[in-house]
Image (cartoon, rainbow, N blue to C red; front, side, top):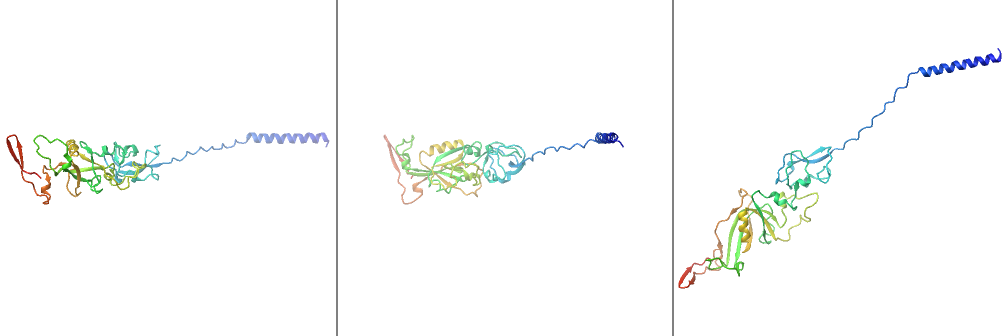
Length: 298
């Protein structure tokens, strides 16, 4: 075979092979599309917040039965709600409700008021009653044995020095040297000084303590705040100017309707308390040409 024929045959075979390969490529099915994975949504981090188990009303005290933890995916300010794992339920036990909280609603810090914070007494004060602060001493306040929440009788102790230099009322012929009278009975103590923690089941923990050092023992006594009616508040406001108001602690087992009562009109004088000082005889009063005999009231 001649060389040109061989070359021609080889070219034809090469051309035929290339055509066959091209046809195979063109006739081959297209590759299956690659499935693109959708990006997975980031997992939602649920947090458990403190919610009310039932409706809470203003003035109501918080106890553990009124609270529960509930998971939520809502975005809530962490400094205004109580979070499980960060806050303890005991932080709010003993606080008072400032405004209405619906059942199942998260408990916000501004819906509560704790002992020692401004507005606490106004929240726990019985409607129609008044909170009156009276001067006191450690002795008059029972050396710390009387606490907020206790019920007491209020006794006015009068001495001869109490009215020294004061004008006598018309028709009054003498100043009683020593006397005492129970002005009010069954009065609720709201606070000693600024300490009202015992009104809240003795649990005053909070996210931020309202009064530093509240847990310390009372080292002084200068005021006692009591819950009385408006009229009784006026009586005490005048009485504190002429004597010492002392607190007589009542038993918590005595029946009480929660309302303070006026004491009887009986006055106890020195001659009725001891025989050391005998009763004085009658006093002779001379008014112009008339003479009057006044029995001693000591």
